[in-house]
Length: 253
Image 1 (cartoon, rainbow, N blue to C red):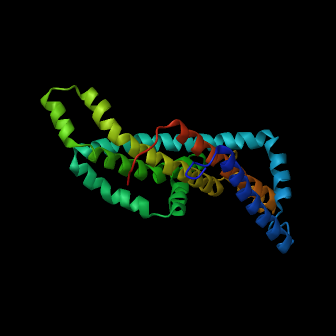
Image 2 (image 1 turned 90 degrees about the horizontal axis):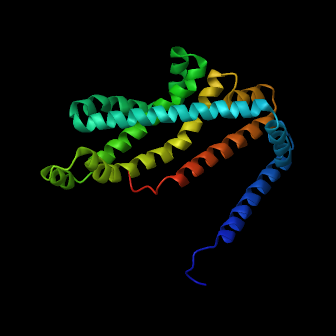
Image 3 (image 1 turned 60 degrees about the horizontal axis):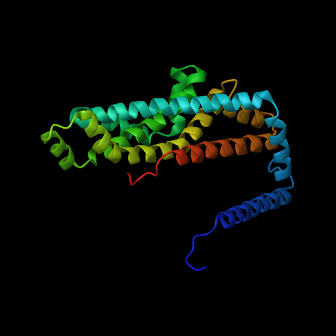
């Protein structure tokens, strides 16, 4: 019927059709190049991925990369919330942090990683890179959410001597949480890119980034494609899965 929303089956079939189209384009490119060293076919890549996922090394590398992403996200989230709360109460702190936040946002991720290689051990470089990339996003979004709280409600609550805990729960959090969810949605994608890029350069033994580098050095292009696909699938699965568990976010920066 006209005006009705597409069914789940229709969405699935549409998604499959799009996937088949791009796989066909990939296969076409592989046939044109005719050099597996440069562009392996989808079948060769799937075979390589199948060989990887049955090894303990693959899952240990996935687990360690996942750990670094989660650790970096949690630390950056906590720091973002704490400093946003402090900045909302002390304008001097906000002013002092402003140049630092702007500088981090403008700094290329590779510069951050290279500096981290000088300062830290290889295993901590991916975590630090993730924190430094995500902290400004959590900070600015949370601060924006705090500033968006309608002061009329907070002032009225103070007049009637409403407890701070209730003000926080019923007035502040509903305004701030959508901004935090939006920041989290952004950082879930950025964190994987930052961590894997840092792992490529710092080369901790068990990591997805290190396996990417190893595949490139050994000219195993099908394995390189396989690891790349694994990273994409896992990062998307984590992002979509987590965001489904959270309430829908509102407008933000």
